[in-house]
Image (cartoon, rainbow, N blue to C red):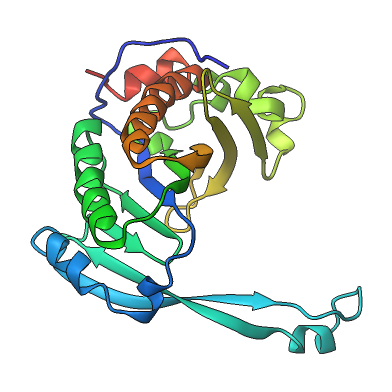
Amino acid sequence: MTFPAVKRVVYKKNLLDEVVCQVRFPPILKIDTETPAAFQEMLRSAYPNLTEAYEVLFDLRAGSPQGSMEELQKVRRTRDSKNYEFVSEDNKWKINLTKNFLALSTKEYVRWEDFISRFEKALLPFIDVYKPADFTRVGLRYIDVVVRSRLGLDGVDWHELIQEYILGVLAVNNIKGKIRSYENIFQAALEGKGVVRVSTKTVQSSESGEHCYIIDSDFFESGRIKHEAVLPILSGFHGHALNLFRWCIKDKLHDAMKGE
């Protein structure tokens, strides 16, 4: 599927809550059994803060189909996987390393060139230190949150901001006022290679109680992916992401974000 191409813009009022880039690979047990000292040295000037956590995996033994208390008590921890978190001095950027994936995330995304440069500066040391044969998944995820009060759009109906084919029942006049929660998920194949999984839903701010709208776009490609293919794949996803976002919203929201 090709979303209509649009001119690239940088929004002054950015809706992005978080951007995440991740590559997955066959398990590298060395990451669990040895501290990543060499990898840290290559990142330490930009990411001086390191924490070590555990991803706890569980399984559920056979039990009553009703999910009784006895069944729940049979939950047991089967394996702990280390998750090393390298954080920038200003706490705005984070790199996570586990035996299965390397990821970069930020809540302060501004420009693609900065983001992909930071990811490359983590990816190349990772390849140098751990030498994965190839990657099994490359993903890029954008989470946009529409908070109308921050855009001067208080009281504006969603159908004036979001396209009807994305809103679904929220665009139906005789029932939209009765909808208490809404979520929609679809996957679309991208032109060439890759898939995007789009999740849209309404949420209520825990701080203000304001109803907000989330557009969560997860672009990914799976299979045997060579090292040199990772950055071109991500750049392709970035191009699709802007087209997809613009396809989801109407001019009124676009204008309120003050694109340049």
